[in-house]
Image (cartoon, rainbow, N blue to C red):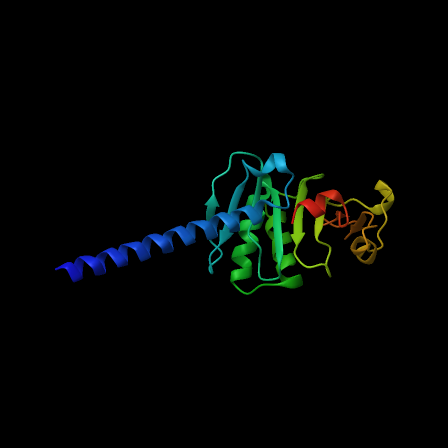
Length: 196
């Protein structure tokens, strides 16, 4: 009997250690998911991911207006407004079905045109982080649906190299389309250095 009790005690200790490691791992995943956000938004933000079928899985329930996903296979960590949750959920479902690239964008546009997802909201802000120095490490993106660079006085030339050197300036992408947005690189700043 003592051997059985000893074995059970070892098993219970092992399970507790595994549970603690898992909890620590989840805490680390959540902390990194929140890292692109300004400090005052982190504590109350939601953290979520998707399963293989594109179903949402909540890792941390939040109460404010932003939510974040853990670092993906490409190395990106992304946060965005809760108001655009339905768009992200549909994109995850479509991606799980094998759609990508232009085909995915066309299907998303079709869903928006049919009213199945809300349109992009002018001025919404999202946050991105990438871990390696060969990419723009911190980036803020402002959605500007259907705007043109001329209307808003924005440049359209990519600033990747300047951003990597800590001298990036904003630039507009996809002007004149529903996916028009302003990229704001913030490499080489006090914020990007503290966020790591």
